[in-house]
Each structure stands twice: as C-alpha cells, then as structure tokens.
Length: 441
Image 1: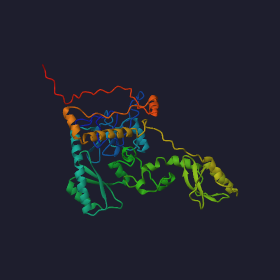
Image 2: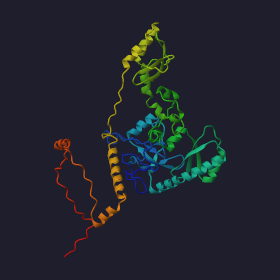
Image 3: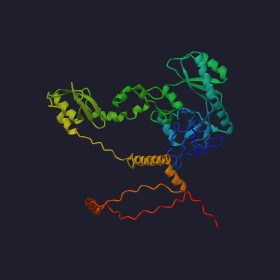
C-alpha cells in the first residue's frame, strides 16, 4: 500500500501537508488527524518543540526539536539513537504532542528525551532504503537458523536502524528461550549488531497488520494503541456463542472489539433480574430460557413444557418475583404474556426500487418461442409441389383464417343457407426476391 494523493513521487515523499500520513511501509498506520493545525497560537507563546515520529510499522517515539526546524507531518527526519542515528517520519507536531505525552505519562520536563538532528538528506534516504531491502531475505534466513537450533520461537519481524548499523529482531515465544548461540550465528551471518526483542501475540499482529473478519484492517495496526485484557465474560454478557474460532482474531487471542460495546450491555443489564431466578405460579415453576437485552424482554417456560415459551418484560418479571418473595403465587404466565402476543405479518417490500424479480421471465420465454418457430420453418422439409412453385418464384399460399361470424350469418346458418363473406378477396403480393435485376437502358 502506498499513497499517491500527496505527491510522493521521486526519491523522497513530499509530505502530506496535514492531509494524512505517508510512509514507505504503507499508509493508514496509526495515523493522527491534527485538528489544531489551522489554529494560531496566542501572541507571545512559542510553539511546542516536541514531535512524534513513527518508524517501521507501529513503533512511535517522541523527540525534542532542539534546532527549531520547520517540521510538518510527513517529513522524513534523522533522529538520535543509542548508536548512530535512525530515520523516521513525522506523524504529529504542535500542541497535540503535549496531549499525547500527558496521556502516555511521559515526563518531558524532568526527563531528557532524544532530539531530532536534521531533515533527512538524499544520502540518508538511500541508506535507509538499502537497509530496508535487506529485511525480508534476512528474515527467511533467520527463521531457518532458529529452526536448525531447535528453538521454540518465531521470528516475526526485523527492523534495521536508519544508518544500517543495527538490526532488531522481534520474536514471539510461549516460554523463555536461550538464544545466546542464536545471536552468535546471527552476528556471524549478517555482519551487524543484533538486538533481540520479545513481543506478545497482539503486538505481533499490530506490527504485521492484516484484514479482520469484518473485512477492514486490524484495529491494532491502524488506530488502537492500548491493549486491554479481553475475557470470555465479555462474550457471555453479550449473549455470544462461545466459539473460539469466531471469537479469536488474527493473533489467536480474543478479539479486542468485544470490549467496544461491553459498557452498553452492562448498563442495560442493570435493570434485568437474575437469569437463574425461578418464577413460581399455580400452573408450575417457570425457568428463564432467553433474554433480549436492548428490548428488555425475557422468555420463560414451565418445567416439563420446554417447547412453550412465554414472553415477559423485565417489569413484569420483577412484579412476579416480588410476589414470590411475599409467598404469593401468580395464577399463570399466560395472563402476562398475552399482552405481548402480537402476530407479526411478514410484508415483503420493494426496497431496491425496481419491479419484480421475474419481470424478464415472460419476455425470455416469448423470445425462445419465436426462435423455435423460425428454426422449425428453416428446417421444415418441402415437398415437390412447393419446390416447383419456389423455382417459378411463387411462394405457397398462406392459409386464410375463417371470417368472423356476425349475427346475420348466425341466422342464415340456422336456416340452412351458407354464410356469405363480406370481405373482398386478398390480392397476391408480388415476390421480388427471385426476379432478375432490371437491365439499365
């Protein structure tokens, strides 16, 4: 994926100019909309001299702009690192960076953050691209070495530093791994400094990206930054089937989107009685079978009559429960359920705005019949008399339809006289098909 709407032609991206975020690894990766870009600062206030820089995939860090560079979203800059320098892309500037630092509890006033050296030159970008091209073949070789050493780990991603002096290997493992021999072989094979960094399964999915079951890009790779724990109780509160294949995401863990609507369900469930609460009536004991959270409905059935369900509202259930606590029994559930016994008529409406779906069927059958008649006429055998008439240029006479009978004809027929036709005889049309062409005088 690459962005073509922001002028990224040439060797270096030209910058999105606050219209989006550009990067060589793809667009829409933890993008931020700067809604304060068009607002001017008050008089006498200096701009906030910290910026947010994104590196490969979803790694973001904050740097101090000590040189007072005119930076905008989409610029490629050279930043300070432990050894050498790194190359990243500006994703946020101005006062929103202050909000992000406060949100992530970064004490920029007491702690000294790394700084931005300069805007990346063409030489820096060429080295950066050359280092990025080595990552994919190196990842294949690194996995082969890990398999040969029989290590229970997975090399998920490799990230080179901007100057190409260090390579960070991101891996996932369920147990602790002794990779001292692995680092020695990596250093001898790749001739660079090696750093191993273990990440979780959710972080791995965020770095690699992908398409979820909803058909959109993964939330963790596009906008989600904090990974909250997701439990199976979130699915139970939402009345979802506990199917691990449907509830698990690309990372193999429970989907993060199970927490999105959980608060709404929890608020709606406050008005519901307990589902294990039994209702005692003169007809028998009733047990809850199903609930509809947002409609506020509950379905009960008598013990022994499991197929007959009765619909009750939460207020009715609370009323019955309060009577049961006072050691009073209700006559039956039918007197409450009769209020909701509404017969729903199924009406099929034309939502597309077209005619019926079978509107072309009749025309299709008519066309088929016409073609069939034409084919029968073409392949129909001709007798000798018809051939002779066609050689002379005369076509066989069509059969005339009987004349319609009027009232006078009906009276004549009753008297025994033949019916007279009032229509004049039809003239023969000349056949011009087999005539020889006229000679020009």
